[in-house]
Image (cartoon, rainbow, N blue to C red; front, side, top):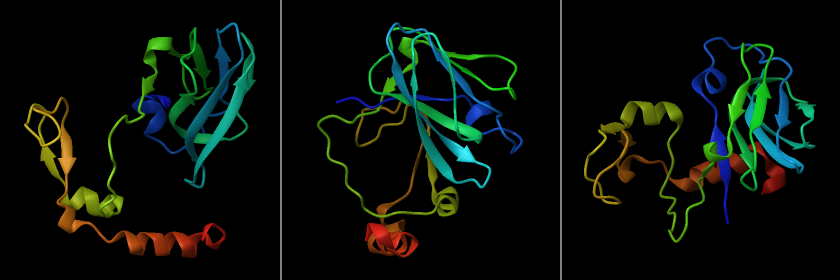
Length: 170
Protein backbone atom coordinates (compact mmCIF):
# COMPACT_ATOMS: atom_id res chain seq x y z
CA UNK A 1 0.00 0.00 0.00
CA UNK A 2 0.97 3.62 -0.56
CA UNK A 3 -0.29 6.93 0.78
CA UNK A 4 1.08 9.55 -1.59
CA UNK A 5 1.01 13.17 -0.46
CA UNK A 6 2.52 16.47 -1.46
CA UNK A 7 2.69 18.94 1.44
CA UNK A 8 2.32 22.48 0.16
CA UNK A 9 4.82 25.27 0.78
CA UNK A 10 4.46 27.70 3.69
CA UNK A 11 2.67 30.42 1.69
CA UNK A 12 -0.12 27.92 0.98
CA UNK A 13 -0.20 25.92 4.22
CA UNK A 14 0.50 28.76 6.71
CA UNK A 15 -0.29 32.03 4.91
CA UNK A 16 0.70 35.30 6.61
CA UNK A 17 -2.87 36.64 6.35
CA UNK A 18 -6.05 34.65 6.97
CA UNK A 19 -7.86 35.25 3.70
CA UNK A 20 -9.38 33.19 0.94
CA UNK A 21 -7.06 31.59 -1.58
CA UNK A 22 -9.77 32.36 -4.12
CA UNK A 23 -11.17 29.90 -6.58
CA UNK A 24 -8.63 27.07 -6.78
CA UNK A 25 -8.04 25.51 -10.18
CA UNK A 26 -6.24 22.21 -10.79
CA UNK A 27 -5.05 20.76 -14.07
CA UNK A 28 -3.25 17.51 -14.81
CA UNK A 29 -0.93 16.93 -17.75
CA UNK A 30 -1.60 13.18 -17.45
CA UNK A 31 -3.12 11.25 -20.37
CA UNK A 32 -5.59 9.50 -18.03
CA UNK A 33 -7.97 10.93 -15.40
CA UNK A 34 -6.36 11.67 -12.03
CA UNK A 35 -8.18 11.82 -8.69
CA UNK A 36 -6.73 14.33 -6.23
CA UNK A 37 -7.65 14.97 -2.60
CA UNK A 38 -7.15 18.50 -1.26
CA UNK A 39 -6.79 19.04 2.49
CA UNK A 40 -6.95 22.44 4.13
CA UNK A 41 -8.96 24.91 6.16
CA UNK A 42 -11.96 27.03 5.26
CA UNK A 43 -12.88 30.44 6.71
CA UNK A 44 -14.19 28.99 10.03
CA UNK A 45 -10.80 27.24 10.41
CA UNK A 46 -12.51 23.86 10.09
CA UNK A 47 -10.28 21.32 8.34
CA UNK A 48 -11.94 19.94 5.21
CA UNK A 49 -10.97 17.55 2.46
CA UNK A 50 -12.26 17.59 -1.08
CA UNK A 51 -11.78 14.97 -3.79
CA UNK A 52 -11.59 16.09 -7.42
CA UNK A 53 -11.24 13.96 -10.53
CA UNK A 54 -9.19 15.74 -13.17
CA UNK A 55 -9.87 14.74 -16.77
CA UNK A 56 -6.72 14.77 -18.94
CA UNK A 57 -5.43 18.28 -19.62
CA UNK A 58 -8.62 20.01 -18.41
CA UNK A 59 -8.90 22.63 -15.66
CA UNK A 60 -11.22 21.77 -12.77
CA UNK A 61 -12.20 24.09 -9.91
CA UNK A 62 -12.41 23.19 -6.23
CA UNK A 63 -15.82 23.57 -4.60
CA UNK A 64 -14.56 24.71 -1.19
CA UNK A 65 -13.25 28.20 -0.49
CA UNK A 66 -9.93 27.26 1.13
CA UNK A 67 -8.06 29.74 3.32
CA UNK A 68 -5.04 27.47 3.51
CA UNK A 69 -4.09 24.26 1.76
CA UNK A 70 -1.96 21.77 3.70
CA UNK A 71 -1.55 18.94 1.20
CA UNK A 72 -2.62 17.24 -1.99
CA UNK A 73 -3.00 13.46 -2.13
CA UNK A 74 -3.14 10.99 -5.02
CA UNK A 75 -3.58 7.21 -5.02
CA UNK A 76 -0.91 6.48 -7.63
CA UNK A 77 2.13 8.43 -8.76
CA UNK A 78 0.98 10.64 -11.65
CA UNK A 79 2.70 10.13 -14.99
CA UNK A 80 2.97 13.89 -15.54
CA UNK A 81 2.83 17.22 -13.73
CA UNK A 82 -0.12 18.63 -11.82
CA UNK A 83 -0.77 22.36 -11.68
CA UNK A 84 -2.52 24.29 -8.91
CA UNK A 85 -3.60 27.90 -9.37
CA UNK A 86 -5.08 30.47 -7.01
CA UNK A 87 -6.09 34.01 -7.85
CA UNK A 88 -4.43 35.01 -4.55
CA UNK A 89 -1.02 33.68 -5.67
CA UNK A 90 1.03 35.14 -8.53
CA UNK A 91 2.22 31.89 -10.10
CA UNK A 92 1.01 28.39 -10.85
CA UNK A 93 2.21 25.79 -8.34
CA UNK A 94 3.57 22.83 -10.33
CA UNK A 95 4.02 19.37 -8.83
CA UNK A 96 6.10 16.87 -10.80
CA UNK A 97 5.77 13.07 -10.40
CA UNK A 98 8.90 12.96 -8.21
CA UNK A 99 7.40 15.53 -5.79
CA UNK A 100 4.96 13.04 -4.23
CA UNK A 101 6.03 11.28 -1.04
CA UNK A 102 4.79 7.97 0.32
CA UNK A 103 4.04 8.34 4.04
CA UNK A 104 2.77 4.77 4.53
CA UNK A 105 4.66 3.08 7.37
CA UNK A 106 5.68 -0.48 6.52
CA UNK A 107 6.40 -3.24 9.02
CA UNK A 108 6.13 -1.09 12.11
CA UNK A 109 3.74 -0.97 15.03
CA UNK A 110 2.34 2.36 16.11
CA UNK A 111 1.65 2.70 19.82
CA UNK A 112 -0.73 5.39 21.01
CA UNK A 113 0.51 6.27 24.47
CA UNK A 114 -1.40 9.49 25.09
CA UNK A 115 -2.00 12.93 23.70
CA UNK A 116 -1.32 16.64 24.20
CA UNK A 117 -2.96 19.72 22.81
CA UNK A 118 -0.88 21.73 20.38
CA UNK A 119 -0.36 24.41 23.05
CA UNK A 120 0.82 21.84 25.62
CA UNK A 121 3.20 20.32 23.08
CA UNK A 122 4.68 23.73 22.30
CA UNK A 123 5.28 24.39 26.01
CA UNK A 124 6.66 20.96 26.96
CA UNK A 125 8.57 19.77 23.90
CA UNK A 126 12.36 19.69 23.92
CA UNK A 127 14.34 20.09 20.69
CA UNK A 128 16.43 17.21 19.36
CA UNK A 129 18.98 18.72 16.92
CA UNK A 130 19.59 17.15 13.51
CA UNK A 131 22.33 14.52 13.71
CA UNK A 132 21.47 13.46 17.27
CA UNK A 133 21.49 9.75 18.11
CA UNK A 134 18.00 8.47 18.98
CA UNK A 135 16.41 5.12 19.78
CA UNK A 136 14.84 4.59 16.34
CA UNK A 137 17.85 5.61 14.21
CA UNK A 138 21.58 5.96 14.62
CA UNK A 139 21.21 9.71 13.88
CA UNK A 140 18.26 11.99 13.05
CA UNK A 141 18.30 13.71 9.67
CA UNK A 142 16.21 16.70 10.74
CA UNK A 143 15.47 18.67 13.88
CA UNK A 144 12.78 16.93 15.94
CA UNK A 145 10.90 17.58 19.16
CA UNK A 146 10.14 15.18 22.00
CA UNK A 147 7.95 14.98 25.08
CA UNK A 148 8.28 12.28 27.75
CA UNK A 149 5.45 9.74 27.67
CA UNK A 150 4.77 10.53 31.34
CA UNK A 151 3.73 14.07 30.28
CA UNK A 152 0.98 12.82 27.94
CA UNK A 153 -2.69 12.88 28.85
CA UNK A 154 -4.59 9.56 28.97
CA UNK A 155 -6.26 8.48 25.71
CA UNK A 156 -9.53 7.66 27.49
CA UNK A 157 -10.03 11.37 28.10
CA UNK A 158 -9.53 12.10 24.40
CA UNK A 159 -11.92 9.32 23.34
CA UNK A 160 -14.57 10.67 25.71
CA UNK A 161 -14.17 14.16 24.23
CA UNK A 162 -14.61 12.71 20.73
CA UNK A 163 -17.81 10.88 21.76
CA UNK A 164 -19.18 14.09 23.28
CA UNK A 165 -18.19 16.08 20.20
CA UNK A 166 -19.69 13.58 17.74
CA UNK A 167 -22.11 11.16 19.45
CA UNK A 168 -22.99 9.43 16.14
CA UNK A 169 -19.50 7.90 15.97
CA UNK A 170 -19.82 6.38 19.48
